[in-house]
Image 1: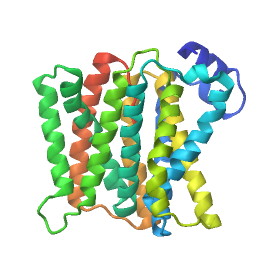
Image 2: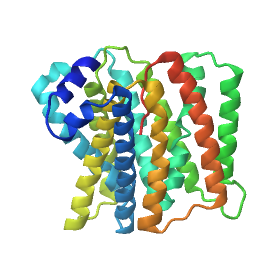
Image 3: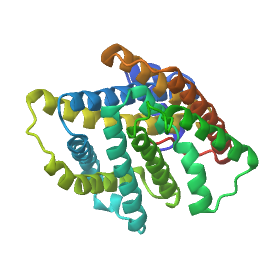
Length: 313
């Protein structure tokens, strides 16, 4: 379905989507991204609350993978198994593994660190993606992007503060999550244009479930009703966030839409303050600002040059 057909279908529907469909495409995309930021922050809050209730993040990731896979299955059933057949199975498995590792890392970080800090560190993804693109894809990078990348990592140092008394090793886990997301996106970039998003999500669900079932069983706790509901909500929020990001980049121009993804940090900070009484210190705020500025510059130049792509997470 093309962008024009998508907009026509939304415009001729009824309810909130109809009103949204009558807005300019770029404004629609921006609103979808901001909505996704709210969903993302609440997803982080649910994961953190599960940690407070004593649920290990490995069990949470397993439940997230299972719920996400179950949501995808009806679409695969309707379209038939041919919809997920591919001649590039190894790449799909590699990107799914990288995505699963990223989930395991940032879910763990969410249970241990302030939500805004983890969200900011996840935005190191474009910094790592640039380095990986040079190594894996053989991309050429000009000095401006290298400088922006170096400045971005100075922001990381401000947040992580290695060697300081306040240094928390879990920040390295959040950084590793950013690296894993970047690796997943680079592997996705190596897939041919014709590969469908449904295929990617299908293998992500399979790999995520198979990889996490063993570790999850080692820490498994029979969920109470409250925990069971939160685990289900976590899975649904994760899939909803992905769907909203995909919609945003289908209806709006990437160069206009992408910067609104940084609203995740604001929403995560507000949620962390209001619900978990988290107050970022001055170094965290400074580091987050530097990371956002540098990755914003890199993302704008990258998207402006290629005109494709959507942020992960």
